[in-house]
Image (cartoon, rainbow, N blue to C red; front, side, top):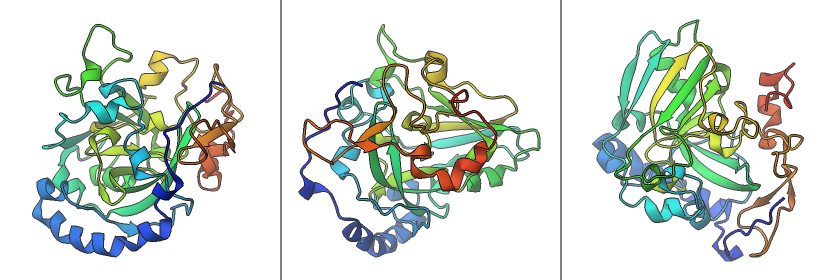
Amino acid sequence: MPVYHPPRIAASEITPREIYMSRRKFMGTAAAGLVVAGASSALAAPLAGSPSTFSTDETLTPKEAVTSYNNFYEFGTAKSDPAQNSGQFDPLPWSVKVDGLVGKPREFGMDELIKMPLEDRVYRLRCVEGWSMVIPWIGFPLAALLDQVEPLGSAKYVSFETIVRPEQMPGQTGFFQPLEWPYVEGLRLDEARHPLTILAVGLYGETLPNQNGAPIRLVVPWKYGFKSIKSIVKISLVEEQPQTTWKNSNAREYGFYSNVNPEVDHPRWSQATEQRIGEGGFFSVANRPTLKFNGYADEVASLYEGMDLKANF
């Protein structure tokens, strides 16, 4: 497995969970009035939600790392590119179209989406390259959005599509394109409706930075990070398994399910261990055992009962 060099972050920069959580009352009061004022003001202000029973109590990854060490190929392939190259991206105005096998297809503006019942969700995020984070997301269950469009009985999967905006996303320009655009992803309908699956609109008490998927992204905490598509503009309910960008790019390495599974190695490295960003020194390597389903086995293992998770990776 290649040696991973995380950013140099002092232990003093890691916000203790009790301090972070103590800020929620203030943020909640401030944000409540701002959300009513409309999307443009709310998206420039603190956000807060109700505490969630699904949250982990692990030490949070420093905000500096969460917002500077990212995979977002629309802004470049290096981990530092999204933070450096996303300044010109304008996430407003924004809307998300929901269509396909639904009784009430419609388009949701961000003013509607941020009025959904928001929750604080502290989730682990595990990336296929061998690094992980613990991030305090703010979002709402995807199921709440799906309920509003009334999925038909024939709907079996949910597909997602991100924006194509090469004039603001330098990773979508040039002769060499590492991926096909738009970036697309998909879940089984029962995965999409699971209460752990959320649409995030913020992190660390603030609206999503551009490099983290502004203004709205998917978060599926028991799957590898590339499943959690960013900057979503379209959600479709479909009958057949949808196309996904990384599976289309290299099906041998990136399967449709992409559940975190230490027993299934990436063809080029082991997935048995991981490096938690913010832990250890600058030259640290993977030193933490990878948990099945990223530690969410009790909640989601039943979704895959009877499946061969090595064949369906």
